[in-house]
Structure formats: C-alpha cells, structure tokens
Image 1: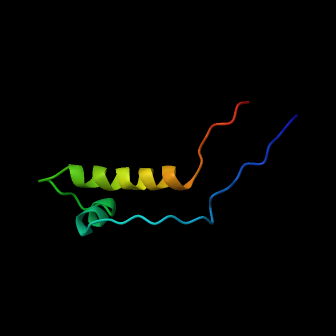
Image 2: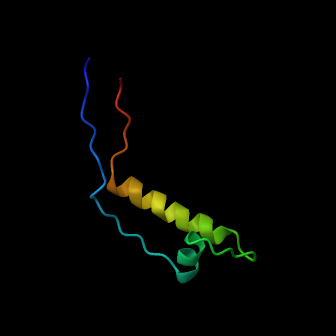
Length: 60
C-alpha cells in the first residue's frame, strides 16, 4: 500500500475584505432586496483560497 501524506491547511491564514453588507450576509442576515450580496462574498472567499492554496488533484 502506498500512501502519501496530505498537506493540511489548518494553520494557514487568508485575508478577505468584505463590505459590511457582505459580512452580515455571511452571518445569516438576509437581504431580500439584493440576493447577490451573499453570493459576492462567497466568490471572494473562493478566489482567495484559489490564490493562496494549491488544490491540484494528485493522480492515484
């Protein structure tokens, strides 16, 4: 059996800047007038992860 240790990212940090509305949307506050606020914040998080960490899938 060949096992490769996986890198853990538990202690790594990323920084993302949100507008006040985006931060509130991520805590569960709903903005009925604009559903795009939460989606925008989630896209910022995903983009920050992709810039910071290498999530390339290794071949098995």
